[in-house]
Image (tube, rainbow, N blue to C red):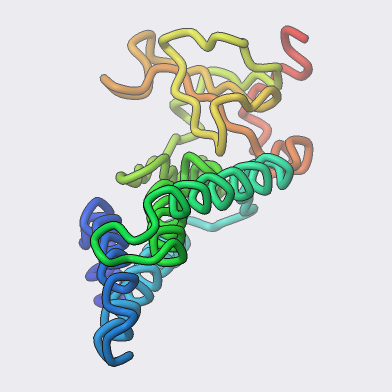
Length: 232
């Protein structure tokens, strides 16, 4: 299983995000014998399966190295997702109606083409970035998928100066890395590093937004200093 997980994690996420382009062929070829459209639909499903397996493989890798105490997978508000979904469907239908018959495609085909590409390729913008936080006995592991690249990060407790339970800035400082489903997240935890230069050259301060902040904090070791209700 470890060999398979390593294989899955070695597949570039950027490559997997190119697979949804096969949706164009699914729609164009649907008036042909179903086998042709079905082949490309199968390729898309395989790509989506590998994306899902990457998340599981990453979590399995963390669990093999550390003791996982708590898992949190925050998501954008349902109202935000539903609104964006409706806008995409309506916009695609209007566009399909306007260019009905172009390149031999019907209005329904154009509608499915536009909506499918948006849902498959721009999902992070429409429904929020994919985020999973794992509190372990040694630190906080984060997998962040804001679009076409996935970030696999680990912040050790001994690298953290303190953690602020706070409201986010309306315009976040340039030093912040917001690892949240939406940049508009208004409440969360700010991880401040002991090193004055930050956690790395690219990451200075980190803002995360667990679903249940209090429960998330409960699993921190006593050595971690949490500043509660900071800057309300």
